[in-house]
Length: 140
Image (cartoon, rainbow, N blue to C red; front, side, top):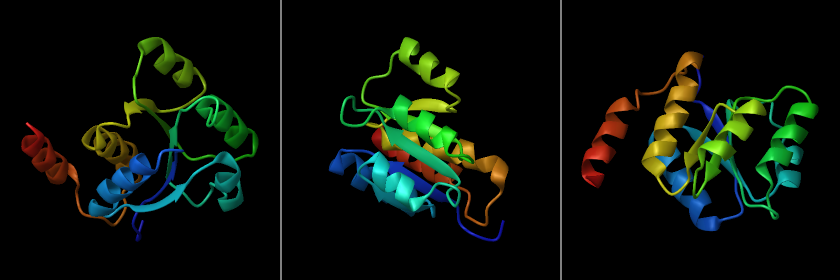
């Protein structure tokens, strides 16, 4: 594809939105951020290549959002963002069709999962693997 990848980030936490938007845009991934499901539905999801959804029940119930987006028709792949990940919860999300659950507290891990999810789509963008490795080594 002759364009940069587009990712929708849906979360109720401003710090998460800003941190992830910055990390993804540094990797030449276009982002749109939104606070709630209603805004996400107004934007539509068909022109995004990937959706990141924070899970903050009851304010933002990611399982409900995934259900709603799937019901509305074409939905791009979804990654769930959680502060604390349990295998039991991750399995529940996988059964809903999400491609993974990642810690929203680790922007490097989020970027890694986003890069892996977008890789098969072959966008016109620089390879972010080096960026991920550079960030990982700085964090160590």
